[in-house]
Length: 107
Image (cartoon, rainbow, N blue to C red):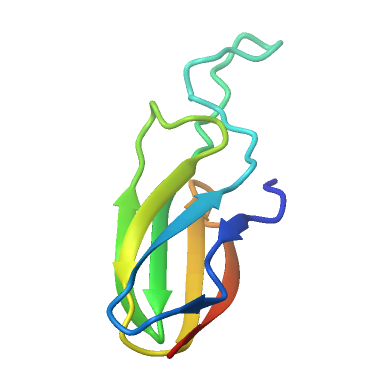
């Protein structure tokens, strides 16, 4: 189970400004290569997809694979043209989706 995602987005920006967004989610990962006490492989459980949308339009996405860190950190930039809401989503191998939203005012 993942804890609450953490996202850092400026509260305000100017029209045309390029902002930096930082995301981190704490997640107990399983590589799928470790054996349990019963000698069987523990199923893989990783965050495999991240998406960032702004006002309903995708602005950044990443597919993650077996070598991803246990607590995936992503940083990316976006050029701002209007005020709105960012929606961030992380998808787990088991289909769980962890999401959070942040608003920004552009003037």
